[in-house]
Length: 362
Image 1 (cartoon, one colour):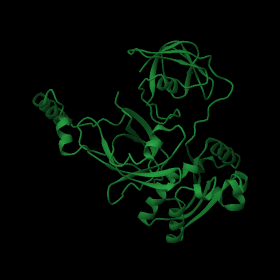
Image 2 (cartoon, one colour):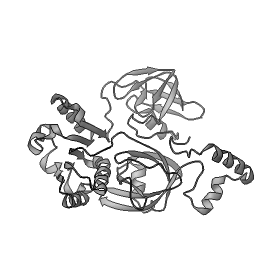
Image 3 (cartoon, helix red, strand yellow):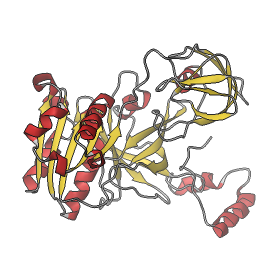
Image 4 (spheres, rainbow, N blue to C red):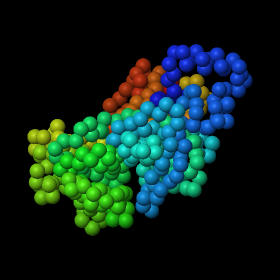
């Protein structure tokens, strides 16, 4: 099943031409011939090539990718779904783009933090990644900076700095830095992604100030302390990205101050509900011979993957709808809210668990 957005949409005449050429290339596909010229060309999907991998910290890397045929472009702050072929399996992940949308070399970058059990993050941190061909899915996300306001406040933590880095690079290229304060937190200074880049931006642009904090030494930034570090925060357009707990606290603080419209957020963390879980059950994937046992605290997507099913997904946090499928039998419970959904409804497999035996048509 192709990832949403990865397919190349050709004009009608081009589609007819491709269909006609297919008769001459059969039993091979047109792509088989195009790959002899360059593996980045395809009439069925968008591709890219990993050119190099740059280490940012001990556990984070920036991956430089050259997009191929009909790349749609992106806005600073958006994310892209990318398919990686790892150990013979296509693995889809959604990553924020850390590059300016108008790099002179046309490359795009993603910045990935390695996780202990992360199949893709471990692959990208290895020496095998450079030269690999990847599939580029759709570019999405509303966490963008359309025009620079007079005053900006950026609040980031951990890998949440990634989409904001794209915004900062875009502002720097345009020479359009307003009055911008950026407070970035990492567990230690050595783990701070883009520490040197942020410092260099502050040196280059008078309008940009950055405060880099180590939470192991200073503790987490509390919303109540904004009055001290940024007294005019109520007047600034604020862009925040980080763990769910941080964003929840900020939202509550901005609501209490009567300026919720000033806060724009992006979360890298999916906060699951604790306590209200389904009873679990057997998941049957219609049209396949694969079934999976799943407890009530595990997402259907995870249980299916553990059983060997190749399932579509994107953000893995209930936002993008890539993993949507039709629940044809049984009921599921949303791991975030506890709400129960019954058969005959489309569900997202990344945020629901079975509430008894279910059948799912993807």
